[in-house]
Image (tube, rainbow, N blue to C red; front, side):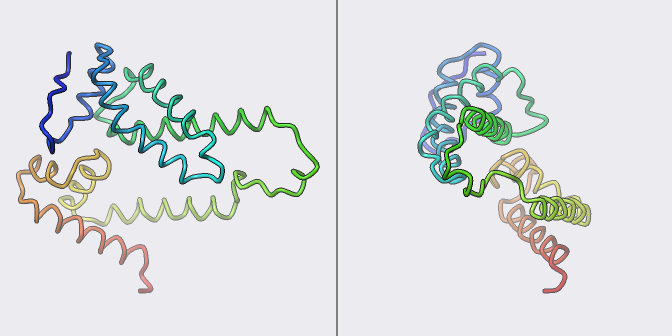
Length: 193
């Protein structure tokens, strides 16, 4: 499957199709398109995560994009959007880099007083777990039409316009359903307000 790279400015890119081209035919043009679009996002994401990350941000981008090239065949469009799949790779590569850097590091006297920001805080982890559980439960309270729109936009990575076209609805209806879903989620998650 050779992907045509001639896109008009403003045309939406079918990222699952790009991933398929990379996986099935090792399409270099498709990979170049993927790299050009996502490499800056991966770098910005890595720079926003940790102090001192600018020293390894380019290395992380290269490692992630190499994994995209090697593992594109494992991508399944029915399970996640390419963005979700990619940032799962970013997270895993980032964790691997942290592990490697910790195992290669020798302690200096000053390091003994340094509080490691990367160690999970058990209270924060518990709070995060409770928050995730609350969000999952509150999603079950949404009407199916609102939940369907949220799935398409936030899990499948589609734009509001693409979701509207998929559902055969006006764009304003899709936006209204998202807004109403968020209001309902907020009222369920923060009942004291």
